[in-house]
Amino acid sequence: MPSYGDLVATIFEQTLACQDPSSLESKARKNGRYAPFGPHIPGENGAYPTTDVAMEALTQLADRVRANDPAMHAAIDRDQMRLLASRVVGKLLPELSQESEPGRHWPMIREHLMSQARSIGQSITHYVPVWLFLAQDCAPFSIGPVRFIRREDWLGAITARRGKESSWMPGVRVLWAGRRLKGGSWLAGIRASVRAFAKAPVHPSAWAHAFTAARRHSEPKDTFHARTIARQIRTDQWIACVEVDGFEREESRRRGLLATRVALDTIRLVLDGTHRRLVSTAADSVVPFSVERLSQVAGEDLAHGWRINRPGVSGAPGLAQSIVDASRPVFDAAGICLAASATLSPIHPCPKLAEKWFNAAHWFGRACLADVDFVAVVMLVIALDVLCGGREERGILELVCRLTDTPASTPVLPDGTKLGQLVKRGYKLRSEVAHGSILAVHQSLDGERAQLESLAAAAIAEYAVELQKYSQSGGADDRDAFLASLPQMQT
Image (cartoon, rainbow, N blue to C red; front, side, top):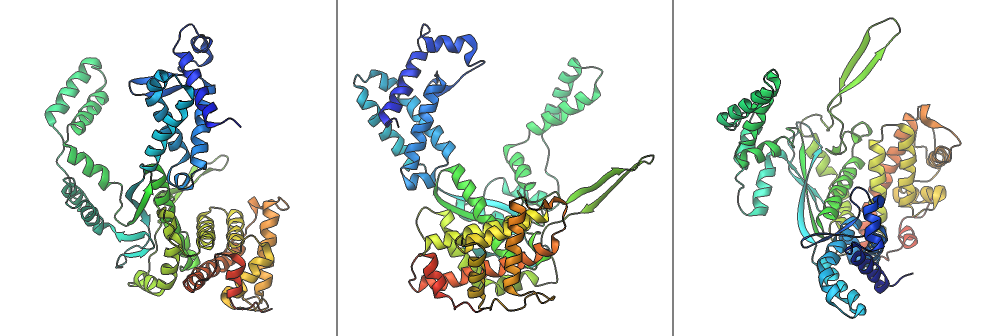
């Protein structure tokens, strides 16, 4: 494996050669090897042409630096680290060319790269629109670092974080109230229409488009921002506010969205089966009004139909608040596990066990949103297997029995199916689907899916609560030690 010094030497030599028009590397670029542009390293005043060999060395350099520093590996996305390394190298190339001792090249790069990488982390609050409760009077609530607020409270949260109100906020309030904002300059629109007429005198649609575009572009900046922001949040959506600390912007955004999804997965644990798939982020959601059918029978006209596919949980007044109040122990316990995703500092006393819960909850949530049953079945069993630490069918059964203090011989379905039989049947179905023993694309597995959803929801929720008790009592961060702390398995 090449050393850091070897990688830097490759980058420097290949890039330096490309600056010489007579070099083989430079001629290879001009002769079409990298048509039409080729790789470049960004510099202070433009970019330096280089080769694929140099870019591969630069990639290896960035990846190894990131992999060898756990904090940096967590804080910076892989692609952002590569970009940062290329910028540092490009900035230093003039200095490297002046340094007569090649052995000094890597220390020079390392000093700047490590300094910038470690200072790149920020404290960022991400706002994620979510489908949660519809037409419900429910107070804001939190699950770990994720706080759910109603749309009408969102502008206040932004103001509190900034320390003053933003100039675009009055425009957003006007639009949310159903009124219109004053448009841009009519004069700018007319001038643009005249120019369009001169270019295309027989195309009225081009005149109208030019008028509309020019008038919109002449709007004040605050009006433009108000329109953009107002249309991103629907009337019936909530906002998930997630504060992520210590990560570069792209990694921070990814973690904020992930934390929001797992917080919603936690809410799914306490909802009825029919409501679980109605909870989602706007990024996961389908269009509320969707075409359901476009079909045609031979000799007949096109048949078309639609349905309302509206996400969000609705019900009797007070439903949302009662769910939040009754689920507080689960939300509190889950929030401690979830908090680790939003900070570099370890928070949970048992981080490995907490991460198992986090991954299991995420698998559960993806299963709830799956559009076909057989995919959901596989994901649900994976969630249970992750939760028990990969001990497969026997491990799932033992963990569920201990968490719920339920003997394996207890009937859990109306047809008399026992808990042990349910786990065995679910794991067998997962194996048959995943290994191709049955091709389940055309099979109806809605019953099996609903049963496994209920089983997984109960296990994951109880795991969070029991883990909180276990960790607060000073338990070791070990799968078997945690299992031993639970009631003995009864057959």
